[in-house]
Length: 503
Image (cartoon, rainbow, N blue to C red; front, top):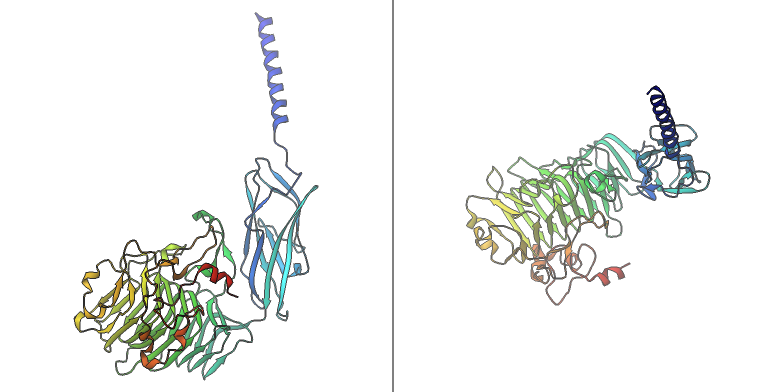
């Protein structure tokens, strides 16, 4: 009996030793044979415009190990002519040489590389390229960094007391605010980049006259993209596609005549805020061949102001693309489109319509005219008005297309020549942001759109015909037909073949 117990004990010991040896033999070794299997969140990190004198944001690259085994990278470092302009942070590790040895990525895990730029103030305008190089014993991988360095004029809490002009000799980087007490003129090609929560306020007249070749741009400063994979986005989303990057433009004069031509404003809290409490006078805003797009709250909010909006797009706002309260408003060949909820945003779209006419407050008399235009979006009702006497409201929505759930409630004379949305209508080419195909919003008409041939060219003679020459071409520069009806909205339909053939 005792002998049997000893035999059993000895067998158990041998079995345990064998099991230990077996486990030791099957323990996965570090995989150091190749870095070719590494997966990068991007193969080329385009930093876009890089400003000197400015501490850049951190750009992020995710490096994933797809294997069950751990992967050891012998070295990670920067190479190339512009490598001295970059600083690397590899999973929290820093060093002055930007070279890291024996970096291990656990199986099925990732590491994050953070990149910043350090551009000397006197660095000339130039293209810059460098490579992050991953090496081990048998292979190497390269990830390209590229961008364009420009000398920038930094405006930090700037207050201008007299009439002033900003030209296109260099871009402007606005920290905090840019306040012009008097008149401000922006010349063709002028570019203003606004830091987080920064804004432009003009106490006099704002005149921004760009051209099709040299438009004027006002936007947030971030040039990079953010990885929103947690929201099932395959590709990083450019910050410029995300609303709320800066505050917006505030025009505070009660009686100035503002004029904006070929101006692009996007991705702020609001586009243009034009408010006037004086009922005895009103400012005028003339907006021509311009695009206001992607706002947390409003595209244009105007109180006691006269508007002439021509050949322009105002799109994607969390509340209203247009909030109009007092004054005379003329829209000719305009596209008002609100699909704010069709792309990632820091907030959801409010239930309010794209266009809101508020005729109930203490305001100067209102008139509203939409000719050859479109008011459309993702909500059932994209146009609404609040007025005591609808039949007496001065205005017209002739040869325009409007989405509204209860169109029968707008049977007044102003809407006799209006075309209403039908559920089966396909209006725009791409009214959504398709991240997987990297396809952004396109509010030009679809080939079967009800906007096709809806416009009446005689309306282009409104306002004394002073916009007749401008309206011969759409916002993209495509010709409108001279001898037949054109398409409603800011864009004329052209075939994809014609689009590809354009320079």
